[in-house]
Every structure is written in structure tokens, then in C-alpha cells.
Length: 261
Length: 217
Image (cartoon, rainbow over all chains, first blue to last red; front, top):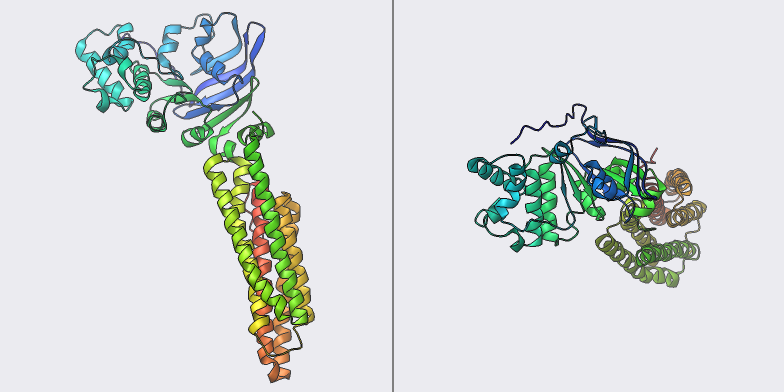
């Protein structure tokens, strides 16, 4: 694989957003967001639909660049480097900050080729090396045993839960430092959801995970810290147990107890 | 807004108010039966204890249903889990009222009643504590709850005083011994009611503040 420099999380902070304002045309989707995401921990982002949590998630690896009329002000640091600097290397950013979406989106190709896609993009051609990456990534996504005999079958024939774990394996294949997950289990059954949740808890040994979820019990089960968003503002961030038992902000309490939203 | 869920929480509060009324009524009737040595009223208290047990079961089922189906968090979780715990204290308060009623039914042969000043004083104090404890919970009033906890000291002092008075009376008149034992038991039950009311108040403090306070001094 082409040597691509990793980000340096020497102070334990993987991501830091400073005064982030984000506009879609005239609509302001994020308002002065300030938050820190700790390295090798799971950070959950919760809040009602349209509150800006997915927008912030996508801005962490500049996926929003693809949205027309999207303008970001303020700074987002990954390992101390501002990813919105003009000189920022997008390829390096997206290799180190992977993303898993709400609906599994495997490519219309074999299981093997899905996982090998990223490494090939970064120049790996040797079969033995690719084989090793594919196995390691599928094992990392807890799906190797289910797929080892179906590596050459189309990924589109897998169940939803398997497809989502395949997508996680595809992300892991390029050894990201941060994995962004946008409601990764909302289209899955409870058993597949449980598998993904267990996977997240195993992955955090090596990877920093940021997960957007509407399932508050999921945030409680797997995350170390939780951030609550409302109308584009980051209202509160803290240790998950504290946010769900004694939130500091009245708006957080009202949302998580279902008094509004 | 989760309307159905908020509705169920309101039902929980209403059920707790009803159970609170049942137990305070049981204690009031017990005190009345003690004064008048009224076996009919005493029997009625014993019979009605089942209704209090039923209330406990009904509220327990409602709390478990809420935990299972609504997965409450934050203040709602504290209120529901506290309710689940404090109904056991409320049910015990009902049991003690019935135990006192049993003494009236089957205890000493004296027909002169149990009208002794410290019993009335303790009785009034614990009724006030129980009412305050239940009200503090349903109104989420931690200040009132702390007042209830403080009031337990007075009940404990009255109990210690009662013991001394009864020992003195037995020394004066051996024939009083049997009745004195009954009165000692009644005092102890009232003192225990005070303890359980304190527990209810402590659950209120937890539900409101999120902190378990040991109010014992």
C-alpha cells in the first residue's frame, strides 16, 4: 500500500471541532459547534432529525464537499491538523477517516473485490497481500466465518446485516484511524444490530468510532461519550452514563425522556 | 412528545396517590380503633390490607411494563425505579397498621382501650410523615422529603420515652404487664412505620436529585 501518513493523536484527542458553522445555501445546519472526540473511544451523536448530527459527521471527512452550496466556517482538527486547510490532502483524510452509512452500500461486485477495492486504489496488486488484507478485514468485521467460502459470490446476495458488516470490512481494509457510522443499524434486525454493536466495542481497541444513532439504548450500550444536538447546536457532550442519568442541560433531559421531538 | 408514555407516567403518579391514601387511612383507623378499642374497625383494617397488597402489585406491574416497553432514562428512570422500590415500604406500612389492628383484636383483655398519650402522639407524627413522604414523591419535592426524614428523630425519641414509661408502669402494677407488652408492640410498629416513611422520602430525594442520601444521623 502506498505509504500514507497517519494522523498523530498524541494528546488522546482524535477530533476537535472549533466554532464550526455549516451552511447549505442560506440554511445554517451547524451553529458554533465546539467538541472534542477522544481517541479509541466510541462517541455517540444523538438528537432529533435535522439537528445537524449527520452533517457534522460528514464534515469530519469532508463528505459535505460533494454537496452543492455547502459552506463550512470554523475549524475541524484531526490529530491537530485542520482538515479544511486549502492544502489538506483529501485522499489521506478519507483513507484515515472511513465511513459506514445507514443503508449498506456494497459495490455490485464480489465480496472479495469489495474489500480489496480500497487497498487496490492505494496501489496494492499482489494477490497474497490482498488475500491477507481481505481475510484480516473480514475477521475484523466479525464476518470471516460466514463469508470465507463465498468470497467470489456477489456481495448483493448477502443479507442486510452481512452487507453492513461487509461495508465495515471494506472500511477497515485501508486501516482507518477513525470510523464514522451514520445510523449503521437502523435498517437491520435486532440480531444483526447486536453483531454490529459487539463489533464496534471490539474495534475501539484500534479505531476511534463516531456513531450517529436515533436509538438511545444503543448509545447507552456501546458509547463512552454522548453528544446531544438540537437545531444545529451541540447542546451537551459528556460521559454517556452521565448524559443519560443526570444530563446537565434541561433540553437534553427533555429530549431523551421524550418530552419533545 | 411521547403522549402515551407521558400518560402512563401520570397513571403511575395517580396510583401512588391512591395507595398513599389507603395506607394513611389504615393508620388513622388504627389509631381510632386503639382509642376506642373497636374490634369491628380493627377487623376492617385487617380485611383492607389485601387491597393495599393489590395496589402494590398493580403499581409494580405498571413500573415493570414502563421499564420494558418505554426504556426510560434520566429523571424518568429514577422516578420509575424509585417507585418500584418505595411501594415495598408503603406495603409494609400497611402491614404494620394491620398488625396493630390484630393486637386490638387478639391482644390484652383490657376493655379500657389503649388511649395513652404517647401512642396518640406517635400516631399523629407517623401519619404526618407518611402523608408527607408520599406527597413529596408525587410532587417531586425534595425539601418536603428532607423534612420527613428529620421528623423520624422525634418518632424515635417518642418510642424511647414510651419504653421507659411502660417499664415504670409494670414496676408499679404487675397486672399491667400484659397490656404493657401490647403497647410496647404497638409503639414498635409505629416506630417502624416512621422508618419506612423515611425510606419513601429518601427515594424521593434520589428521584429528584439523582443522589442517594443517607439521612440517618
